[in-house]
Length: 196
Image (cartoon, rainbow, N blue to C red; front, side, top):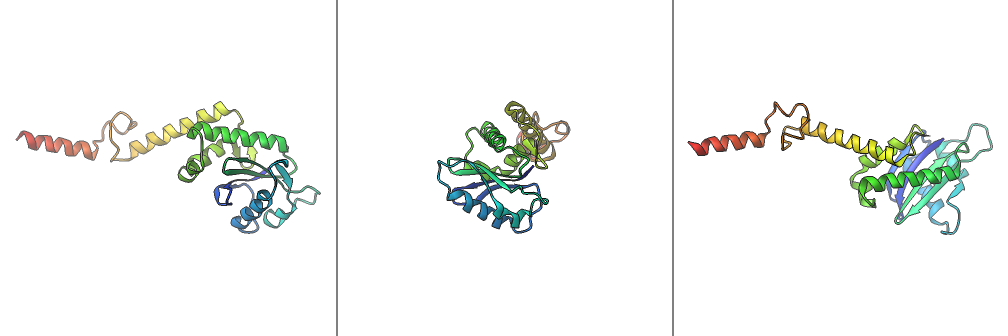
């Protein structure tokens, strides 16, 4: 099971955090601990490690010898980190990180740290299309991209139809045909005053 998905920069500042199991201590302390484990590792080492230090944060495994594992990839200035248990394949999680990054890249067209800062809701939505409740739902990049585009379009249409200040009547959705925007009302009033 996937217990946490974290993205933080090379300074250890979190840009996206999602926990699928309850924490026994503060999330900020956990992020700092994981950052301290990863940041000191040389680039030539493998991208996963056993992390018995995380038991204090996530609790001990249910009476088994299994340890918490941290699987990560470093892309430019960002670390993509998954905390998993022994039921997950490390190589499968590395592939899942790649799918997640490709999904972000498709949506943001070459994702960068600022995209995650200013569009965190969209990044969380992309993650939710891939993982729900710590279980992998979808790994097909095209399907993820299509679902995210469809949800974005529905969100824009919903906003336009619910916002009386939205401009234009074509993109407003089902309610916009009967509503007149304030700008349209003002334009009509000024036009009628000008003709007097």
